[in-house]
Length: 347
Length: 264
Image: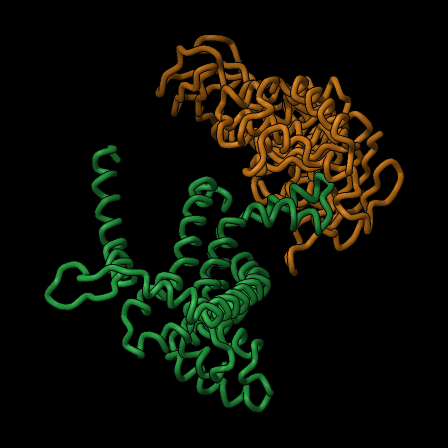
């Protein structure tokens, strides 16, 4: 079992608050990622769950039991650090067996468990290798195997992919997902890479400046951000002001029929993702604009278009647009996200 | 480096280090050797016979005394140096600079001054002319080196290894024995060897604090050298150098294997 609850967790380094009132529940067998820029306090949360840092207030419960005062070695929550941290004076097998030895498990059983986990992490045959003979990806897999072999109730992964190159990252990502599905280990996964969080986790938690900003399914955070900061973190660039009047949203880019949010008549902030804007060189779209800049990004081209109400960033799969060209845009009303007053701090 | 170059460099190092020893070896096996002869006019075992027969008991006693003092000094230097080096290497705190100055003081101030000053206090405290007094005065010279070596070791030490071990279920004792000590072992060996050899070669401090009652090998060696019997002095010198030489061989072999990789 591994039902993890973090309740109103606050953590300080000296006098500096790092985590403020952080609450999260991770159900048994779930994979939840904590996403945020570096310095947001993501690792601190993992360390608190692992017992390596004491929170100043709040509670951490595992399967209903409080972990307050339980030392790290007795928690059954195992952390895998950003660096592999393999003990250089031990070979692969000894590294993986470290935790089992610390528990005083019999030699035969240790050997069996190590062989099983080597197979699971695709490290067969490497058991006698020295640490410095392994590649970066292999080291990271050994580090993961070393934690998994202990069958933890909660696995805490601290950016385990950040030291790997793009190709290895993809392989490791798939491996972690595969293992998580097989073992059904409750996993809390820290990353600063939004695509990694979206791809890998059942639910995503966004942490900005030590505070939880939104938690939900990857699609929720991507398509329905709770506030402009969340939208911005997921690549949102088009923010504009508007006002609801007579059931319509009036903005500098036009009038849109949208479900009314609270704050009728008040100035509101709205956003639309760059890839949701329709663009055409000749079409009959309502909004006229002029391409100011064009950047080819491989899968798509990013355009900055100057319109009557300001500029918009458009992401399109077509490559026929060029700076100076007059284009027509459409902002589909169903793709516009309006933030009710109170959710907006800085726009 | 190419094998040929390595041989040349190795040969030069051997010449620079080995030649003075060759001289000592020749001296110790000579019965008569006068200017301008290039080699002794008469070879013999007289010096070695003197060491093993006539002065055997005295020299064996001195070796035992030296070993005891140097071992005790090295062990205490490690026991104090390890936590001190760890604190200095891993943590930032006020007064770190002051501590480093205080640590280096006994090394900068001439040993005679340190020993004379301490002698006064040791007489009052009843430590003069005692084994513990000699170990204490040796520590004033050895401890700074041990702390500095271990400070360096812990500056390059990643304490996250300990967090990882703890998360994997290791107790505090488990972490010290299974993680910290193996990770810092090469540095610990260097610090211990440094302390041992420094203590082994102390003459002045031992003479002043030991007051002739604690007769370590250097005390005997100086007595023999001043007696003017060069072959005997050469033989004693070789006996004196032996542990240092063995320690060097051991550390070279050991360090070669570990290649300092333990310090992560």
